[in-house]
Amino acid sequence: MQSYTEENYLKIIYHLSEISNPVLTNAIAERIQTKAASVTDMIKKLSEKELVNYVKYQGVTLTEKGKLTAINIVRKHRLWEVFLVDKLNFKWDEVHDVAEELEHIQSNLLVERLDEFLDFPRVDPHGDPIPDKYGNFAELAFVKLSKLNSGDKGTITGVSEHSSAFLKHLEKLGLTLGKRIEIIEVLEFDGSVELLAEQQKTNISREVAKHILITKN
Image (cartoon, rainbow, N blue to C red; front, side):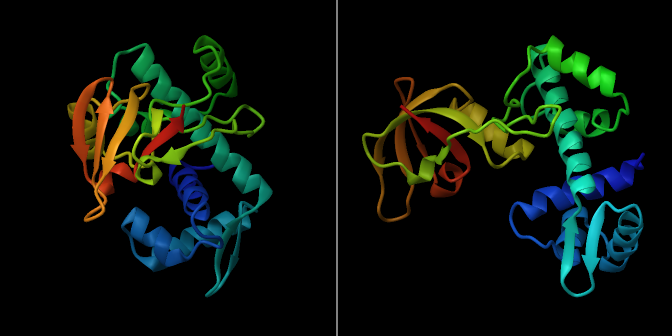
């Protein structure tokens, strides 16, 4: 069994490894906002438990055991987010910090009952895929809104930015999961997008557009 801090490190390494693998200790330190020396100390502990492989100056990779542990933490986090939104009426910008606490509950039976109670959801409230109990993720076909052209249509099915400020901004614009959109125009000057969201016209910056994930219709 891993400690709360060890689980957080594994999850962070897992997420960072999707961007670059091996993961540099400086990248971990920046994400956690701590000193690189502290990260190195923790990495050595995880290595002793055979959860990571660490080569000095080259970085960190998860072992198979470490990867499965990290994916299980991600699974619990996303299932709890679904529960909080669907059953307790939390907003999608309110659930992350609460799920951060709940993901460390050490009961496989509870997680399986929770999954069943929620009718085995495939995605969390932000559109991120939820792995099954074997660590398998559903195949989801997304395209960034910023990659669409005039006349393209689709449905908002995810976001790649989870900050509360960003999610609140999308909610204010009416750009939430499940909304159907149609691109009116993409401005060549700055890449900003004019679109229809269920017949309501709105404009968003290129920065916002690149974090909205669409399933094309």
